[in-house]
Length: 373
Image 1: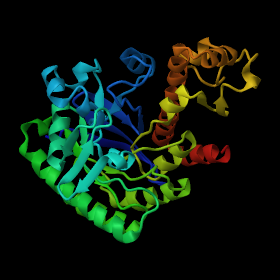
Image 2: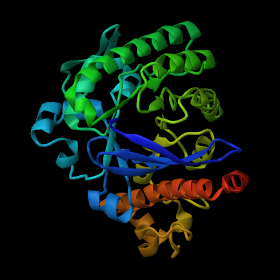
Image 3: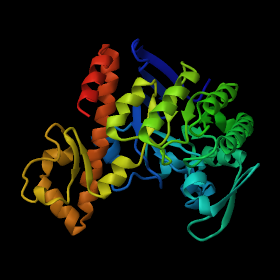
Image 4: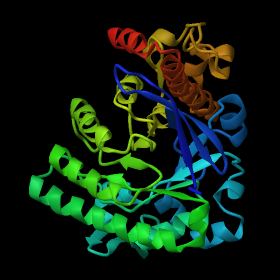
């Protein structure tokens, strides 16, 4: 039996957008889905109760590199795994550390066998091989684990991207071979990641090679690395159709709220991004009327909610004037309230998209959304 199972409930004939159910050992996830990022085994400023009960989050993302450094996979396993450690009963996806190949480029060295990292905490060296990253994530007890890949910066030349893409494929094969030899693989799905920079031919060849693994799902990586946003959509449009239609498709590290409908229209089922949480802490709130920069003086005497169309706790309870006061005063409550609202905004977008696909009204919904951009 596969570690996850994906049932497609409806597909939009005009666009290929899908609504489905992703079944995991820790619950069923309604897709398309946005996954809040809990890098250090926590979504910053929110409790598991906030996430599960108030927001109905069905799956979180956590970071393999950071959790490897602390508390470490051995301790995590002794304490019962990541779910028990963070008191989270629902699904968890962990990345492989591949994005840190990009973001910590001054602290790592890439070899044919993996990546040598120098810890940003204390300078200690740690080697991440494709096999080691699988073992780490199995120790965590992730529902969905990711293979080690090489995430390239933008821009980059075709020859360098080609060599890197071939390396990513070799790492994926090594990781998958090791994964199938581990008994714990029955509880954790392993998704390969399509790379290839911004070159459609490399994306196609990478996808074709990775499909030989017959994985439970596939990811599209190497985006949100400085490329123009129009190019992001072009890469997804060129890559998603190459992936198996009966498996979940996950685009890593995207996107802005207004981009989510377009990505779903391209057949994407899963997305994650730090924007709703990071922007919340910095005073940027996403609303149905556009972005609210709460520090602006225009909100000093504003008694209204952040978003009149939102029914989250923050919008039901606090005024823009009060939230501005909290932000300027540096109060922790601001981060709590803003993060709760921003994540709710993202989840509402995805739930509305899902309902329109199920109802057969997705093209009209998409047209309405695009006309308000």
